[in-house]
Amino acid sequence: MREILSTRGLTLYNVSGQSARIFGRSSQFYVPHNLYYDLARTCSIPTIWQTLALSHITDYRLSDWLAVFGSGLDVISRLQFFIRRQRTTVLDSTVYDPDAWIPWLAGRPAAGLARSTAPLAHLLTRAAPRRAKDLLALNKRKFLYARVGERDLYALPYFVPGSIVRVNVRAVEEQPLDRNRNGQGPFFLVEHDFGSTCSRLIRLGKDRVLLHCPQRPCAERELHVGRDARILGVIDAEIRSVTKDHDSRRVVVRPAASGQPQLGHPPGEPTSLKTLLRYSRTSLGLSFREASSISRWIADTLSDERYFAAASTLSDYEALPAPPRHIQKILTLCLLYSIDFEQFLRASGFPLQKAGSEPIPDVFVPRQLPSRNDGAPSAGENGVPEPGDFVAALVGQWEEIPLFLRFSLDQITGLKDFSLSDVFWVNGEKAPRHPLLANATLVVVNRRARKPSRDTGNAVCEQLLYLILRRDGSYLCGRCTLNEDNLVVHGYPGGSVSKQQFRNGVDAEVVGQVTSILRRLL
Image (cartoon, rainbow, N blue to C red; front, side, top):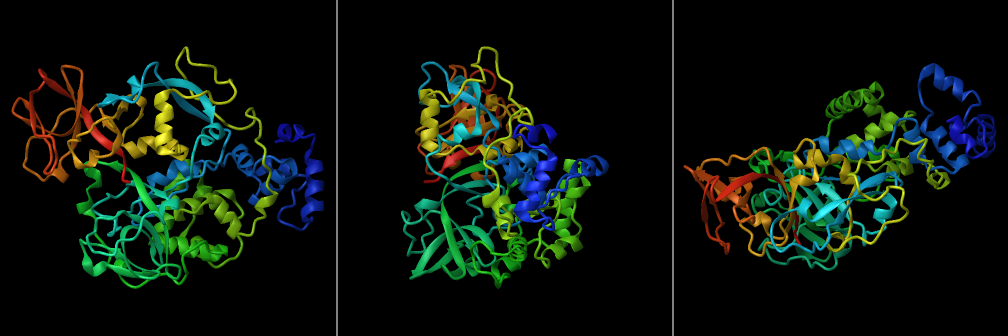
């Protein structure tokens, strides 16, 4: 901390004096002149108020100061996918450190868009790591992201619990609501008086819509847009798990999900911290006891008891107007209730406009430079070079790089030590062998699961997907079963591809089981 202040020509004595003049000596933003002694004696860190004062006086970013004190905000992105949610949750997709180093890729020479299934490692190679802010500059628009809850009855079974959906906010007006009950329209992310859901909508009249649920017609709900509901956007893409662990048939719907509203707050951003906490917790269907048990897991995972919050403490936070003093408790609340960190501070009345805007130099912030292959360009090169044809086309097709997912790829794909070798390009397939592969771009393959199940006659939706390598070097992706010594690659009812049979280990072999699919829905 002393060295960081010296880069601005400041000492702690100067900072203390400036904080007293700007905020007042009796203010919580006041930085005491003996802060070094307190830090060394108690091994604690400055409060969130004092950290904001440091950010204002030094003009260094608040998120960087928090990282210096060991409470980086990227912990939200790392842990939010490990918490199982009963209800659909909007994810925090903020990149809190724009100067973080990101592993990056470049197209291999003469590698255009592949016309058939191919390993992504054959099309891409490692490039020099890039700053997050340079990659964010390539984005054409900003999307919302949500995770489908285990008991979102309007989303199931079209989606599966844990699916990550991308929400196009600007496309709401471009997708007219269905006036019929055919249930073939797009899905919308809707925030309503008892949480959020992914649902098809039927227009009933001006500002009145119906949450469409063909599997359970009795659960369909009429909502008034603007009064008790808000349409956040159109779902246009999905990262879907296709393993048995996400079987939608195991979901048990609580009666409360289709009953009377549980909240007395209209959709939108609450203006006070008490309202925000209560609204966020109840919209996720969490009791204080359940939230406290999750905070215990967070504390154990991070090996820091300060992240734990007892049920009584969580109850007190919804009754008191002031936020917790310690940043660890604030991060726990953001994780528990899926609250954006800046939204939390705004609801707490923090003057975020006073926070600094410049990055703290890398030597003081734990920004780890990713490893790279020998022969890759130097990471110290400035700017982002023009990407190869494949990378440019991929970024242009998807319009945004979801960098916040980079911490959770192992969890999302279900693979330990996930790598580029586990990803396969399937966008070139004109006649997919399974409905889930229609409009798919990438699949992730577990290359350790190479033995398909015997043909049990189960329904198509209950079968696993596999990647098959033929002896001519081409790949097939689809539902596969083992019939004696033969691999049988199936089509699906209504599809244009018929069943094929190969001698196992002679004409073809299984590369691995598909665990995740990235696909477009619109």
